[in-house]
Image (tube, rainbow, N blue to C red; front, side):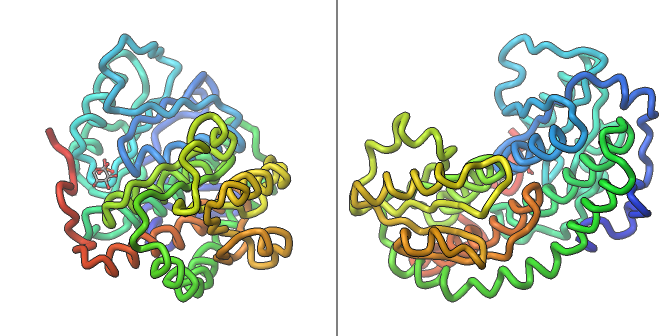
Length: 348
Ligand code: F1P
């Protein structure tokens, strides 16, 4: 968290002060919609951001694939806020979509890691993630810092729109200050992750399932595995499993169920997913809260993580999945920093 926000913003009692923030209270109160524009990993953080902003600022959020935005006639109004999310700030599709939204009257802000990048130049205001240089091609710390930036933005908008009291905002910011310690703690799951990696390093396919804020985590877990291990992987919302992917499940299929307890997700639904996989011989790897006594016995493998508040849980739950992709890739002899066919920023 400190690295994300250092020098760029200030947390005071129940509020977030971004350096250079220029949206007036009237402007923020008049917003009718937020359109998030992003590609790849950044799009996944946008899906998690939707949960954060809708919950804390009660403003509708649409998460658009930037690579599709200009191939239709999108509805954009001056009461819309376009938020581009990009590690590099140079991704061609995100930049084009951002310009398109801006030219149609939206207020345009960016969440970026690179100061002076094309997207920050285009933006009226930028939240800098300050994740430092991404050495590897596949985004990892870019993802977790984007989540933190989105959370801060959600608190800020919530305060300005009056949907969050000072006390509620303070509580959310306190949750945030607990994240660095949780990240240290979650890294202790690495031996368990390595065992899973060894067991499934030769799998042909992987399925990742998550509900609510864990849906984008499932998408990101699958993408990381694809990007660096070259194993085919799909991320799905848990409730979608029976609408297709269930046909793929057999005894060779590892299914990662990301299931920390969440307020709006009935736990029986998660258990239902696990039972459906097990009934077809699939191998369940459950990512669960440290103190979860229910799921442990149902899964073939368990990875325990510290329990974080619902909206920030994606930051913590993503780490074991990044580690899984890393260890599988390394065991298969791949270059984890320079995976084949991928470019750090896709500028064409
Ligand atoms: C978007 C992205 C990354 C991915 C790869 C290709 O980049 O899809 O998420 O890891 O590097 O580009 P960005 O817009 O976040 O820089």
